[in-house]
Image 1 (cartoon, rainbow, N blue to C red):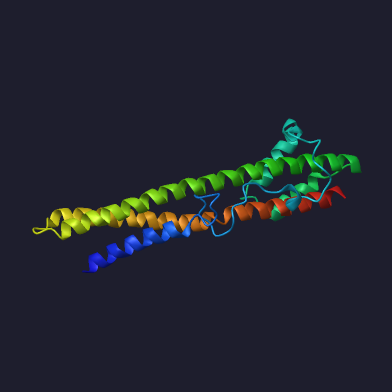
Image 2: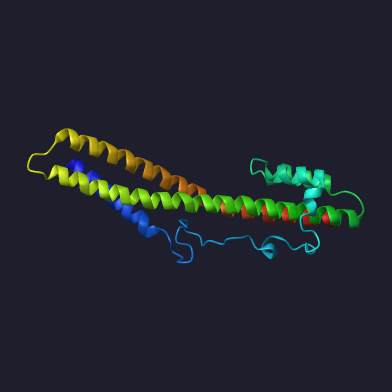
Length: 204
């Protein structure tokens, strides 16, 4: 009886997952509570001079490229990143303006790409979760069928029950990971905004 209760809970868990995703029909695999915004909007994170003339020029400057890589890494504390920006933003006003535009263009491209990769990974895992939920439901029905047989095969029951318990554990572990990773796109956007603000201050 206890085992049946656990299996029923597994089915409810799988069903709840299916009902909790795809709040926006445009993005059926998006699992997060916050709305999916495919790309960061430049005006939302940058109030400095236009970047229309920059393009990929930042990639041609070895020093800018190196600084972009260091600042884009979330393991780099924001205080250290702001100090690096201040050290870079030296020279005449025109030089600082050029450095600032190149640096932010590089960060915008790099962090937007990081964010897109995280979001793509979330949707990929969500598709796996949907498949796992279907498998849990099917295996639960199969187990019930064996349990309800006229002459139940206890060895088979134990095998299926253990398999189902393992599948449910993996399912729940993934669910917790998804909840954690759902915060990462927001963290990236906030970091980009903070870095953009520091660059703009250095350009003044």
